[in-house]
Image (cartoon, rainbow, N blue to C red):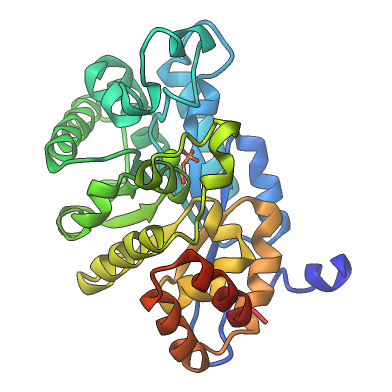
Length: 322
Ligand code: PEP
Ligand code: MG
């Protein structure tokens, strides 16, 4: 079985009716790139850079960050590498004690909010990413956007980082693409605005589910209520994909749902053409894409999207995936 899957490594991910799909890998540290390459991922769809900052006392400086990002860019040899800026806070603390000092860490100063309130830390990271962009195909991804105000502040700081490199004659990719994570319901509902101002979108289903259902993703007491197939979650995902497609901006899903076989066909039918997942899922998802005829599943997927009861959706999903 594993042997059979391995043979798909170099096969393109194309549906039976000829729709091409990008299957990218999520990584946490540069050494994960080997796992992504081993399964033939065609890019890194999510590089969670906060892992470079966790479990240590001092922040990594620009040089250390640059070295890590450059290694990933070079090892991927021109394939896209989507570097997410620091997503610290809530479930990803630099110092676990810090979480206890605020009442609601998941709703607090995390991710882009933290970076905008600590512009020096952000500036250092943006410079490191930009410098690495000279050595491969890097894209920048902003986590946890909730408003255009944050996006515009981010763009201003990115311009400032670019300006500082130009002043020092340090090369970087002038055409570097900027994307945003859609993982807050407000951003999904307003996805068209983000699609207009960004080069690409990436849906973080882990947080999108947490925030739309008000289920703490780290709390076992409510884990049974954490439902990716909740109709509201499915609608938010579909809205985001449609907004991106309408404006010609690529959309990917980089949360756990992208690597979950239960949802591959449904996401394809919503118009998703880019999936990013843990490397261990890439080949099984590829096999599912290869065994899917998009035209043939439209009636059933429409039925799923029109159902408003999770008890109706789950058996329909099962049927879809047979
Ligand atoms: C997500 O929220 O779905 C996501 C991909 O980011 P993370 O799991 O790192 O929060
Ligand atoms: Mg997230």
